[in-house]
Image 1: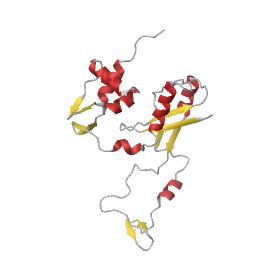
Image 2: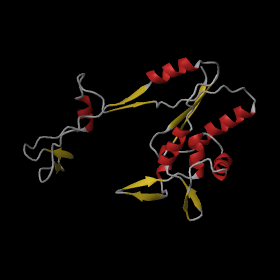
Image 3: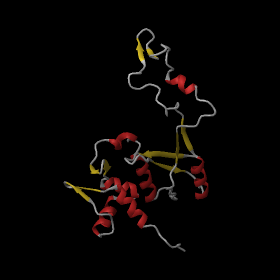
Length: 204
């Protein structure tokens, strides 16, 4: 099977993957593949602190490594700790696909095909960490809420920027937060708005 994929970074730390496949695959089969796909992160146990306060490892210039302050023994390296992981241990983290899934059929040479290709290639030149640069925030209690720009909102909703502007002008969208001349949105407001748009009755 021929396919092309790109990862879309997200400030919400929930990156999206966009995949274009050549051929026909049923949605039911795609859902089974997504449900069976995961990535395990195996790290040494880190639940209990071994050294704290004044009881800290000591650097030894002769061996070029850290020593136990009480026994003088060479501390295991990261590789040694990974090798010590046994069959009774569990992965520290399990990454899976989220519940949101959208599959669309596209004909070659159509306007939709060009749009999809442009959408995929846009993220080839972006790093996953690019979206974690300087951003506009506001204080919420003791924390900070990352606000979304109109471009980020459009990407999130899979619509164009003019569509977001039209929904706002019609009064059918979440009110924006004005930061200078910029319009920003609270992602929690977007989530609430999306839930309100869910259809309650079955469509024939």
